[in-house]
Each structure stands twice: as C-alpha cells, then as structure tokens.
Length: 347
Ligand code: PMP
Image 1 (tube, protein in one colour):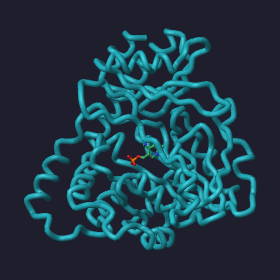
Image 2 (tube, protein in one colour; image 1 turned 180 degrees about the vertical axis):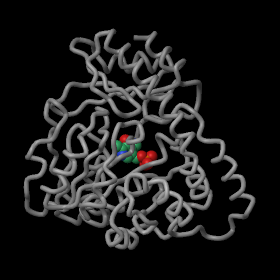
Image 3 (tube, protein in one colour; image 1 turned 60 degrees about the vertical axis):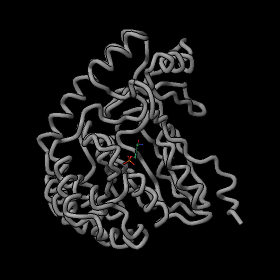
C-alpha cells in the first residue's frame, strides 16, 4: 500500500523547463553563460577513459580540490568535512532523511524554498513554518525550543527574496536552536559573505552548496555540503551508493578548480543584477535587496499573474510566486544583458 504520507502530498513542482521553441528563460535561476571551458574538456577526458566501472562513491577528487579552495573560509577543512551529491537537492534529501523521522518537526522560514516542505512530507514529518519579519530577518520565534524539533533550514541568500541574514545573525540562530541548522548557500557566490566559518565553530551547522548556479552547471547535477567529520560520517550511511556519476565528478572538480572563471562570471552577473534592480524600481516595482542571481519584484497595483502570462506569451519565462499571507511576486533570474533588456522592454 502507498504510505498515507505520500498519498496526501501534492509533490514538489519544479519550475517550467521548456524543451522546445526559443525561450528567454529567467525562471529557475540558471546561469546564462556557459561554464568554464575546462569542464567540457574534463567530461571528454573522463568519457574517453571509459565508463564501464562504477564511479568513486565519495567523489574523492572533488572533495580534495574543494577542501583546498574552501580553506580560505574554513582553514581546518579537509576532504572528510565534505559530502557530495546529485545536486544540492540530493544533499537536502540526505539531511532530512538523516535527522527527521515520522512525526518529527522540521522548521524553515516563509517565503523560502518550497522543496523543504516536500522533504518533510516524504518523511511523514510535520513542518513549523516561521514567517520572515518585514525586514526579512528572523526573530526569536525561529529558535524557540519545540517538542520533536529535529532540524531547521535557512536559505541564505534566501529564495525568492534574495535577501541575506548576516553571518553574526546565522551564528546566533545556530547557537540558540535546540537542533542542527542547515544553511542552504545555493546562491552564496553572488553574496557578500558566507557562513562556512560557522561550521568550524559549531558542530550543529551544516552548509550546503551547489554548482548549478554560480558555476553554470544546473544540467550536470552536482552539490555538496560542509559539516564536521563526525556529521559527514553519519550522512554517508544515508546517501545512495553512487550518488554522483563519473562525468559529473570530473566536471565538478574542473569547475571548482577554475576560480578565475567563477570570479569573472559572478562579476558579470552582479553588474547585470544592479542594472535590473534599478530598471524594475524605475518601472514602479518594489524589489528586495537581492544578493543572489535573481530579483524579487512585487507591485502595489499590477496583476503579476497576468504579467507572468503576458511575458510567457512573448517567449519570456519568469517565475510567478504567491505565498500565503505575502504579496504575490515575480522572481526574475539574471540573464545576459540582451535577455534582460528584452524582458524590461516588455514591462
Ligand atoms: N536551494 C535553493 C534555495 C534553491 O533555490 C535551489 C534551486 N532550485 C536548490 C537549493 C537546489 O539546487 P540544485 O539541486 O540544482 O543544486
């Protein structure tokens, strides 16, 4: 019999991923530029080396290189502090399965990443959803001790708002919470600061990252988390045996190795983001202070569902989102300058 917890679920609805026609795609926060050329070369070499054997179950090559790169922010890091996954969604799944069982409680803010609820639902767990304050900060309500609270998620930068909590604020949340805190840093390379140092200070902090956004590899599926080794040891028991394939491991290792490419790409995205933010404001939208590769726009009088439909008819996809108790909005990913100009012209 299908478990009742699954039967009653709606299921996660990912953004539209059209496969046909010419679309300007600004709806799922992909990078508009191709990845580092080293990535393609690494995939070619890995394919030529042969795919008949299983991949390294721990993605050792990536862990080794990532530990070197991440040591700038977390000096004590070694490969044992890193777990790789099939996108950071896989990592979030592993974390939920590790910490949250049937009847337990998972806490996260609203509005935020919709997948968190799906992960709790699959476990037959309850959710405790805490609204952001008007200034996009989280008050004491977020850290309240509650029976069976097992895990808390916070996306930083947050989606859809792009707003951030300061490192000091996240440290305070982690110290006050009676359960581990997952800091979902999917968009952190576009932000001014990251929370990696907190992992060294507090064994309850777990930072998740992805190569889908700043490394322009959403099609590849590679993410990872950083936590103290005794936590990683437990997570390894829960992951699929070979959750990252050989081509992805080779590609991701090449990608994280090319930090010069990352820096240049982020600079381009940030310049376009600033221009977009100004233009949306000029057109009467209310926007948040985004530190991610998208802009969250609300409007006092315009029908944004209609605007989303009109843009879609014109071949421009943005994400329309409406959260209970919050003004509806559209989230527009930072595209190339030409894509953004086409979108702005339609407004
Ligand atoms: N966290 C947040 C906040 C996201 O917006 C996304 C992208 N949908 C992810 C995690 C997952 O990204 P991926 O699975 O591509 O690594």
